[in-house]
Length: 325
Image: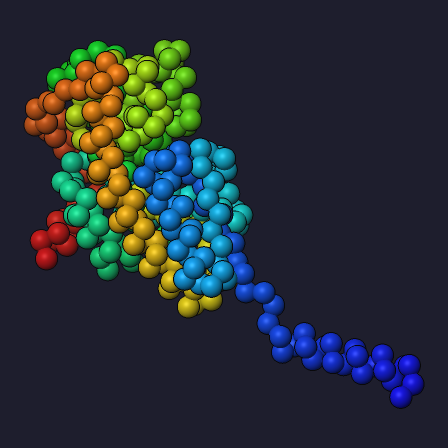
């Protein structure tokens, strides 16, 4: 066989191999969070990453970026929508600009326990809204049961009723249901990035904030506040979302594995939230911050109109029906 024929044969064999040998199936999903690695959400994401790698035989690699390394939550959502390989754990209310019904997960005084929120997050009614999210925003919701805790009022002055919040600039999440809830409670809602809250309180740019116990401790907000009032006005139930473009690179088999592990690790992280939240409040109190219980009736009355204002009455009825099943 001459040299030309040998080259032709090698070329043919190589072409055949290219057609019959699959390319590397490894896919990387980059997940960012504004929270610290020792936060329950951070621990849950790290465990999720390890289990995904094991369960998929290394075909899916989850890279976790803590402490806002990929940007603020809103920035990460925008990156994912633009097709970047970015995902995040986000309060579901931020996604309601694409699917308005999703705001119900952050509605005030709706869920009494994590178990209730977890049950609704797995319901057919809620999952259908998740399907709409992919169609409307290019985001895939892997799980919506990552619980970060009850949100409480963090102030420099004692608070016993909505009247005590009058004129107080309170940092909150920049979604309508959060903004209107804080406004109804009596404060002036002031959306800023989570990473800026400590310095804003320190400098007096804002007067107050609202956050869950683990975040109060993790972000060291106890250093720049005087009071935590246990309003529990919103149960912060968050969702793990990724770019649809990146998600659709996975095989159907790996998609099923990743979704299941997202739900399971959401429950793991949520259990940590509940356990560490109690410890965090004790630590905050030990630091010198006053922790106060309060009569919730005036606050519940104050926010009652938020449901009608944001056209969430029907969704609230759906939640109650699911929880009653």
